[in-house]
Amino acid sequence: MIVWVDADAAPQEVKQIVFRAAKRLGIETILVANRSLDIPPAFTTVRSVQVRDGADEADRYIVANGKMGDLAITADLPLAGLLVEKGIFVVDPRGDEYSPDTIATRLSMRNFMDELRGTGMAVGSSAPYQETDKKAFAATFDRLLTKAIRKSKASETP
Image 1 (cartoon, rainbow, N blue to C red):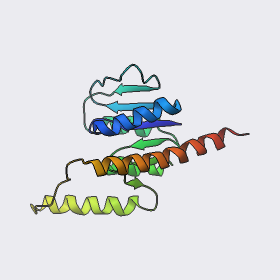
Image 2: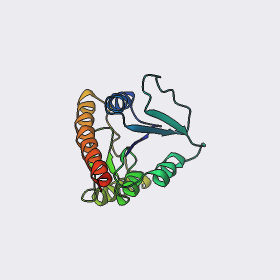
Image 3: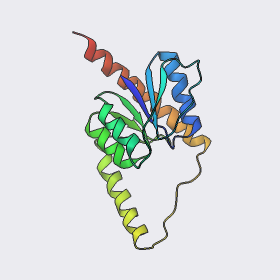
């Protein structure tokens, strides 16, 4: 089981939560970004992968390499949709879980808002990342990480 982080836009607070969990549990964690990322040396199970510049390069890498039962962190709804289809657990940095039950509605709403923006209608943007978002992320991440670990151990049992 691997924890994947769509790291180009992931808040530092999210990365710190993920790093600590990776160290505590010894879980392989891969940050994927278009730029070089520094990983503190104390986090030996965490590494970064730099993909070439270009839209969706990090997304393509995660989709190509992620496997059923992995866990991914992303705010990118189209990427989340592809990962959910593969059986990957997905959480966004604000603590929202993307699942087979919720992803279609989320994508539909995203597409509707894109259409509104395309017509010139002003629509709100995301609020700044806050302490409540960090707490919600930590709780959902912990719950999904527990599920992913259990699923991984169950698949290893003969």
